[in-house]
Amino acid sequence: MTKTSSFDRAISSHLDWLDRFQNLLDGNSSEVIDPEHVRNDTTCEFGKWFHGNQGDFDDAELYNRIKELHRAFHEHAAKIGSMFNNNGNNLDIEASLFHLQESSRSLIAALQQAKQQSEDHDTD
Image (cartoon, rainbow, N blue to C red; front, side, top):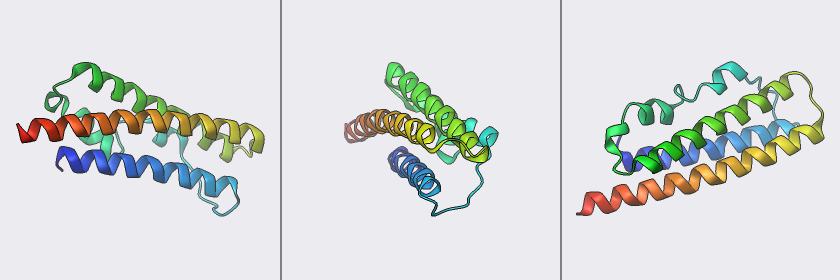
């Protein structure tokens, strides 16, 4: 997997999670989320690639920011999964989904920055 395609896939994957939770909230899905599996940020496709390729990042600060944002995204997603599995209050779930969306926006912005740096580096 190339760096550029990894960034694109990570962005798409995290947007898909938002859609999955929205579908659950809207009653359009009966998917059961395994919070412990979701919490682990090293087992998703991007996480596997990302944690194994730290050396590919020229900007250690950006790498660490993405690492923390990605971990936080998975924590939020696991929390929401638990709320759904325990028939949580929809208002609480909506509030948590809002935080997940904010987390996702920050992660996507950092991934886009890393993708741009990677593309700039590859053209040098």
